Image 1 (cartoon, one colour):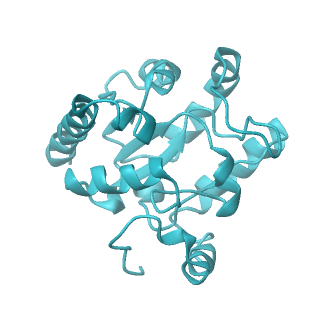
Image 2 (tube, rainbow, N blue to C red):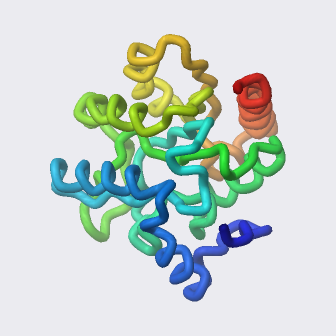
Length: 208
């Protein structure tokens, strides 16, 4: 496995992006990529791939964001290494909480792109969360080691309700969304994100 980047926004480097794309069919992410492609076909919209530097089907922590942003087309990955403020914050927060990259999978509650081509991102609708709910069962089936779910933001927390019905034993630890818009609002937002991730790290330490 290649060495993980030591700073955020590394996928803005074309050479590093090309190297990441060359790993996209690695065994540990291939089933998740197939699920993403299935969803894309059924929804008629792009679905970014999981980052092959993350844990893939071996992940023990599912970090659930809301929906892919407009910038996702630059890389095609759901990744903490994307050149956005949200991704950079995630990179730093996960590192600060001491959560190993191999333990994580970053996914979206609504996994397909919902904005029109060239348009700014918008908030996902409740109807889109309802349409996305059936995809949680096949996602969970691909994550046999999953020990904790961390939904980021109120929408992701509400959309994660089907996960609790499917796996009532699975701890769900919500955190605020790591967008700079929220993180810069108050020091308390940063503290709440880190507190949630530290709590998730405790579950990981206790899990087999």
